[in-house]
Image (cartoon, rainbow, N blue to C red; front, side):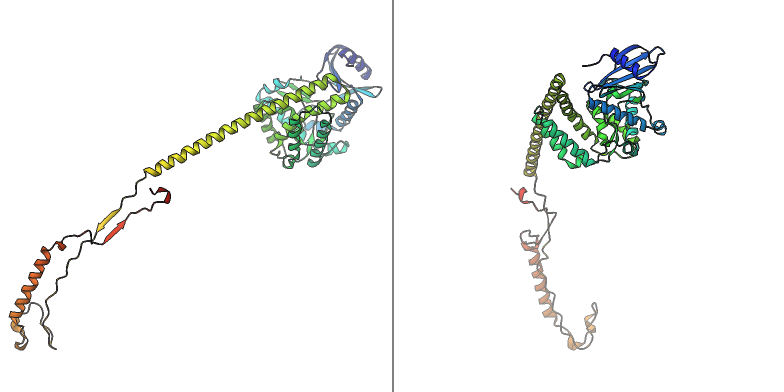
Length: 431
């Protein structure tokens, strides 16, 4: 049975001697595990009460008590936000109720956070980086859980098997989560300290600044994506990107490329964990709510898959049409291409050679130089002028005949050709 804020105020007076509440109010919390309230005393101081609803939740509060004790003053001073201080406890049977000195700031809904200023998004990124850069010894010295990347993945596989036994998870989600968990490359990350239960109800905000983080019941060494799951569930991409951008800048270790993908998967898987928890405690209303949310998620995923398939089919059809048009255009262009011009250069016929007149035989003496008078030649070597005249007349007659012959003109049918600038056609271009 849920406790009212007035009942919790009465329990708080037993946990903190001298506490006299003058006003009470409901405090957001994990309703399946805790009853919480805010108290105001006569001096104007605020207090927060957290009362477990079952033994497992009580164990978580006791774990948080050890965690907060591990936050030594030196560690608290380095954090950009405050962590709670436990003012008192009271045990009732197997359950222990804790009272905390209330911290400044107030909680905002995820919609209010995502609609906030860029400065708030950056400060959330700073807070996440500060958590993940905490020394691993903080967790190991407190004997808290520590998981390697492969151990964390195997743990999620075991939780998936447990969730499947409820028989209330749509097959679409089971296949989706199983395939993602079997993708080993997706789960390669450097383990770090993680809050483990980070969401908007554990984030105290004032004037665009994260003033405090509460709910340190699940501190462990594991996957940093755990603390991003609640952000991804906001579906505000610009807000998530602003937080991640500042987180990446502030981290000492370089975040892995699959951080947001795992965060999205863990955000979905949180619904299955919620179903398992509701079933375990026998809470019918919570179980029905979990089943409804899981079915809505499955419907959304199937609708998105159909949309993606339709978009892909349209893109493929458009690509095929464009390719066909390109091929047709290329074919048309090929048909319209003319054979390159051929330059033909005719080499003129040299014509019939004219025989040179026979030279008279010469003696052993030096032949007379051209232009010398015939009188200088010896008498016994004087050529027969009559014979020479007949030969010269025949030569002239032959030359005139050759010049008047049709062969003296350029004959393209028999002249040699010099062909240049010929571009060979490819087989596909030939008609």
